[in-house]
Image 1 (tube, rainbow, N blue to C red):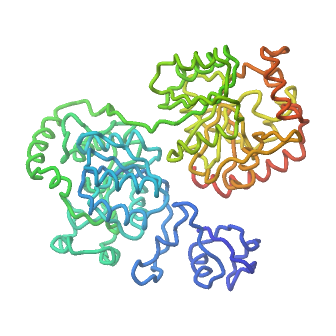
Image 2 (image 1 turned 180 degrees about the horizontal axis):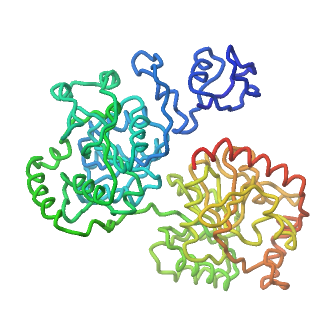
Image 3 (image 1 turned 120 degrees about the vertical axis):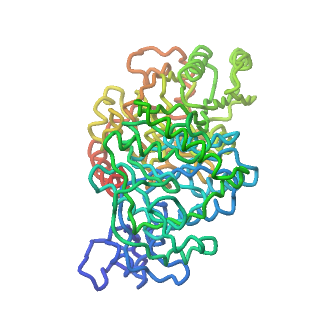
Length: 589
């Protein structure tokens, strides 16, 4: 557990655990010691991220008394919850899940719900930051689960019904099942389900039980091999790799899809285990009720389909479902440079495979450029024309304000050539690391003399990702970058030079000063070309637009790309970011 020392505290209390730390610092502690410090007001729990809210997960919600069992650590789990109305139960499910679960990613599939449910999910998505897939109509339970598989990133996936509530340490206990021989599927105890997992003495009381009652439920102990039912069905990704996904064609509505999956998994050599001391409360059949379907009807049909399937020798089911991805807005600020602008826009439209919106801010360009922009006929493109050159900062602030509800936004210049899947690859990096921004590799990626750029990365701390290297740094303000928009809580400030003109250095400075917990990175897995400015293009001796170079020099009289590399400072920063990585990232990967 992580905790932060309170002002005036630098001691270690009455314990043998003695980290060297001062007030305000964050340190790792065993859970029992961390709780003791917090209770004695020596420290406070870290609540900056959901994964660190361990303290909440081991407290009785009514009495605020710490429970006997500490938080049980486990590997990250993708939790997939299909939703079709039944909003009261969805609320209970999400509130319980967030309160008593750590080290997970949450994926909610809105399977054609009504407006009231959609509005609630949108509001909770903004607050909790889960992935929300919205279907225009109810595609069925199996389809929704397969969408969750496509959206998931963890090695374990838990399919959880929306009419469930979890208990303290439910997931940590459940994950112990994967330590059993050949384990591929695990499930908890419950009050309402088929098979051996049901605690029969609770079935008549299940609708009257609240979170306190659920936390006080004492299930049996032990782990036994048995059939697992689908109200809380957790599988290892290696099983999916071997047998595929749920059979949407045979079981479109729901009921028996997990029986089919388990049968195929067993055919492939995997076993299913019931982890008895993990408890998940299941009210039962709420989605069927919302659909106006009697639960027995699809089950009868599905049982026949399952009997037929057992004569089919093919146990692999391909994931054919479609998912919608939230488009990423891209900013391109345009000022003249007609030929470059055409090439830059064309490369974005043709080479951006990930869904996007291109917002072009025309900064008072010559008429020829304006006419070209107005001829662009593409629904993904939006253009704003300014009559005069307002500079970079106003354009960026307009863009950030317009797309303030997006998790990520991107930025390219109008002399940038991007290549296929550049945006998707940068998003993969941002999803994997807590960064403020990640930038593609190019010759303006480092503010040093062009002949020294090749030596830059050897002085940076980096890790391998996706077959290439991610190098961490403290600022980044150039082109070909993806930005974590949700971290920008105030307008970008311009920095005046000695001519009184506003420059964009405030973009870099803001990042360094405000987001020390979220550094930047350069990703060698994505390359972009710069067409302009001789000192940003290693292979060009004469600029195609010398007048543009002169304008840049007036805005930045100290030059651009002409700073001599300070190796000593880079090495110091390398150590700092390596320490940041060790404390904030290494345990999450």
